[in-house]
Length: 317
Image 1 (spheres, rainbow, N blue to C red):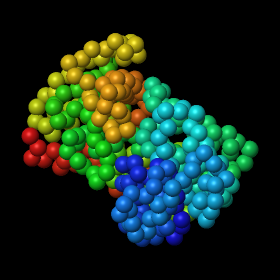
Image 2 (image 1 turned 180 degrees about the vertical axis):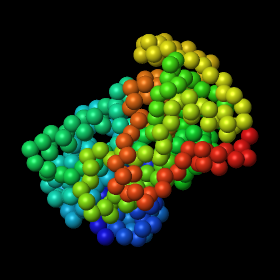
Image 3 (image 1 turned 90 degrees about the vertical axis):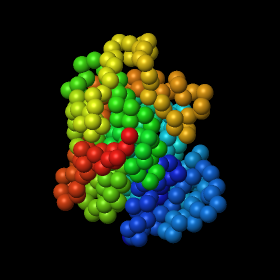
Image 4 (image 1 turned 120 degrees about the horizontal axis):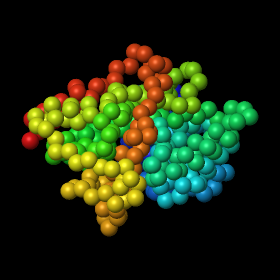
């Protein structure tokens, strides 16, 4: 049993992982939040703590006795990543053994401007450890969640589903011209959560890069699988890279990014930015991840796309 602190623990991916950690009944969990605990938040095994991410000394007191910190902090509004830097400094002061920064997605960050803070956090951790290992850390990278392809039908307890440029529901896709052979890693959020829970118990040293690979598929294979499962050809619209880069691309539809963190009046703008960034990043292999935890946990079973999506879409119109 160890004490685990989870920063940004009210987010949907964090909640999936917390559920698995709580179910193990092995660990004491501190949920750090800027907000007061909501009414009725008395889950057994979880202690909600209101945290001040502007004061590393105060935060270090909160982290006394903590073995592992998992961060799910999103800092899109500030690429300099001040919250995570404060959290890292506090973790070092408190003698925390392991730290996982807010990653939980792609391996590369090219064209993913909203992830700039992740790049700065990576740089900060690398710089801190350049002369000696002051904080063991790892970057959990599962690629793209397979669950997103079941939108609008839920396929996990907490993950907020959004439309993707490959839209199984409406049997259509916006595809970068020439991207059919580009590959992405697809992993269910359930598999990610199970790996993280086992990583907490792992007695060896964490690798710096923690790739988790459900399956690798080319864009062409994903669309072909969608057509097989949905029983009809997809309507494909091709996109040009230069138009994606300039923001001048035009299509008959745009995948809607209706995330709770995005103000309603900004949804259309961010939907276009993220759709363009997704395809450019895919072309740059940003969503192709490694398989460190597949090799470290050879007995783990990973859900395969055809099995998962066939079941998710069974009986759906």
